[in-house]
Length: 592
Image (tube, rainbow, N blue to C red):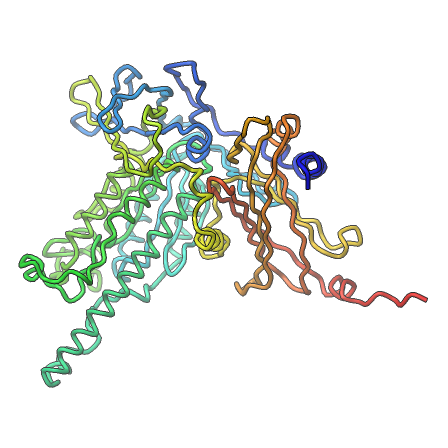
């Protein structure tokens, strides 16, 4: 197909699909933020746009900064000139500056009645007036008794929840569940916290698979085999938990990236260590023993932190065990929920590593870690207060070499007695390098995003319209996408045409989760200026068609920018009535 013909096709499709996106994304508009631009050239995008869009389109680096005095109270009167920002030791010019704090304004709940039944979108539909807060109840990495204790503390916290403070609740088990989307209603939040109970299949209250009395009766060689089996099993389970947890944190970042401003992720968990040392004790490590079996996750944690900070998500880990020293409140809950502290906690292995991971992830994202305390309700409330008052600074890096290396960010203030907390830095990855990745790696990533195991991604926003079966659609469903073109990586090659690569996909599942049908295809386009302008206004179009037998289905819809790798997904549903299915499947009458 020639460039001119391709452009004509794009115009025709835009007229059908793009108009819907332009109209339907307007009901909810993020509250504008007060921003002071330190320079008028080049003009930066507004701070309230998603960080992923900023990174792709302008490579503007956004840094949220929490400033407190010696007593831990927020400092609210700093100006742009009070900050000095450096990247790898080199001072950078602050291009965007704003101050955010709770407004006390009445929150606007999402209006679920706005969209017709056949239209689905991943565009955030919650009017943001305050910082958003997410409670992550981690059942994968938390023993049952500690989960009970943490839920009780969360009920206490909800009794103190400030008005107009939006909170969402997620739960992590063998998958990540959205239990309650953002709301300020404590009753809704309390109900979902009490209803969802999980038991981790990979974490038990005892690390022993056989009673000690039985093991003692075994020959010494069998005791050694039992010990080896237990160590290998615990090591494997820990490895799996770490991988699944990091995947869940990344999925949360993608789910929240479309919301403007800072998001505080309050993670109630026992956490997990950086390292796994199977069959290696401390003495052998100190003596320089064989560490070939050691698995180490620090770089994976750094990468996960980078994805979180790109989405302006700050992590506030809260140790669900409460006080962990010689005693633990959760260990005493069998006799009294809030009785006298007692019950020795003999299992302190990994506590230091666990707390180290919590501090590292919190520090790298600009949050705080809370552990060795029994007032979990106060820790959560403090997390919300801490992350609700902050400054946003943004700059264009003077170093234009996007080599993928980690760059350290340091921010100082000339105000005495002020402590600053912010992200450690970022990986200087060129978004365009995604196009050169192995096709199998990219297919795996897109496939995981289309899974029902994780919430939808808002990195690349879109709206999808499903046309029902009819003669006009040749008795097939027609799924039409209108993608927010501002987040797509267009490039020019001197001929005035705007080039882009976009993929769209759909997977249909039975209600119980079994996959029924999937379809996907990619588009490579070169748009002349007039078409490019329409696409930017109305949305980038893409279309799928498919048929299904009678039944109720869950549709997972997704789009991807082929250059940057940004992905957007959402979930909808369709029903095919038996009468409709029979009509579709009926053979055409023979022609005479």
